[in-house]
Structure formats: structure tokens, C-alpha cells
Amino acid sequence: MVNTPPKATIPLMAPLTPMTTRKRAAESLFSDEIKVKRTKLHESPFLREMGTEFVELFVGEEEEPFRIHKKKLCDKIPYFNTMFNSDFQEGRDSRAFSPKGKVVCFDMLQYWLYHGSLPGISEFWDKSQNNWKCSLLSVYSLADKFLLPSLMDEVMDLVIAHCNAQMLFPTLRDAITFYEITLQGSALRKFASRGIHYVLDQPVTSDKAIWRIEDIYQAIAECPALEIDVLESIRLQGQGKRVKDPRKAPACDFH
Image 1: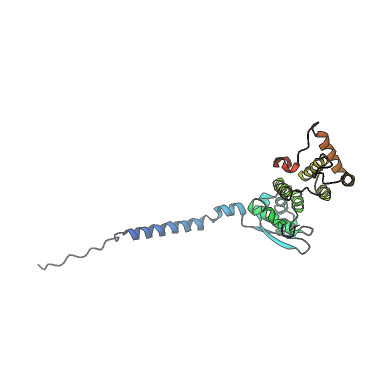
Image 2: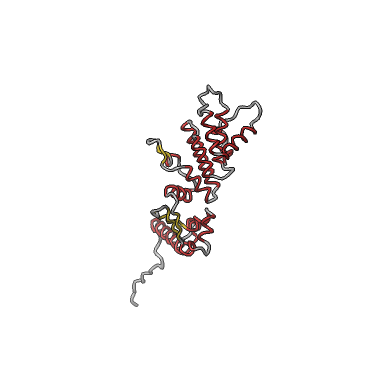
């Protein structure tokens, strides 16, 4: 009988070294993650919020284009929801035109739409030039047009913060502009009328009495609605009480 050497047995699976175990675990982990991404892309938190469709807004006489996620725009601004989710021409074409719109204001609106809040005052006020890069009043007017109270509140916070930082009030001409671009009861009107009342309440010799009576009279004569609000503020003032500086009032007073 011939003795034959025993056949080598081939293990069905090679022993796993610690390195092999870690490598396979990593491969399994990442391959599973890839499968999830490929099969559940529609469940992405970003896409749930933004959607996959876009609309185009063409602003100003030169029709500056703004390409925005349709779902985000329509969820946040009812004005555009009515426009784009309807049988209007804009809804069929997914495009709209605003020839009288201000590009810089729509840029701020787009910033607010995607970031959830406006940028800081430095994006509006050029400190080195002592001038506005983007008018807060124009952004407020746009927010008013689109019925966005939360955006109007943010603009008011920036207006008051700027007045405090610069240690000034809006001018009488500014006050008239507030009334020209807003409706009755707006926060801008309230801030302007209370500011004039505050100045009127200061002693003539005070450095806070920044306007002459003649100038105030001319302003309210030009804008009867301003006159009514100033008189109403005076009437509601408690007898013997000094008028509080509206720049120091709680933010909610102008929301």
C-alpha cells in the first residue's frame, strides 16, 4: 500500500486579520452609504427644502437674471407661489419680469431667502464712503409689496441699529419718504412720527432739539398723514411724562 500525502485542504474563507476586518468593514460601510444616496436621493434634506425645479426672475430695465429654486421661493413668498403655481403665463414659462425692480434689492431678497436672514448693516452702508450701497427703505418697500412681515421686522431692526450707531434720527425728508412708500400703520411711519414727537419734547436749548419748529411744520404740512400720527402720539403721551427716545424702545415696538 502506497502512502500518499494527505491532500491540502483549502479553507472556504481565509482567516481574517485585524487589517482585513477593518478594510472590509470600511468597504461595507461606504458601499451601503452609496446605495442609500443613489436610491434615496429624493429624500435629501436639501432637496426636500429646495426642490429640483428652478424659476427665473429678470429684474430691472436690463433684465438682470436671478435663477432661484422654485419650491424655496414659493414656500417662502406667497406672492410667487400664486404666480408660479397657477395657469398664469409666468407659471407656464417659469419666468417673470420686474422691469421697475431694483437689482440690488432683489439680491438682498435672494440672500434672505437662502440664508434665512439679511446680512449685516455693512452690506447696506458703506462706512468709508458715508453712503448707502443698498437702501434699507427700498428693501422694506419690496418686503411690504410681497407681504413679508418677518423681513420688514429685520429691516426695521437694521434701521434702528444704524440710527443708534450713527447717533442720529432719520431726517424730516426721510420721514416724508417713509410715508410715501408705506401704508398706514407701518413700523417705519411709527418710528418717524415718534421720532418727531421726541424731538418736539426736548427743551429748545437741548442738543437733541435737532430741528427747528418751522422745518417740522413744513414737513407735516407737506405730509398730512405724518401730521396726524405726530398729533396722535402727542395725545397718547401721559401727562407730565417725558417722551422716550424711540431708538431705545424694545424692538417689538416696531414689529
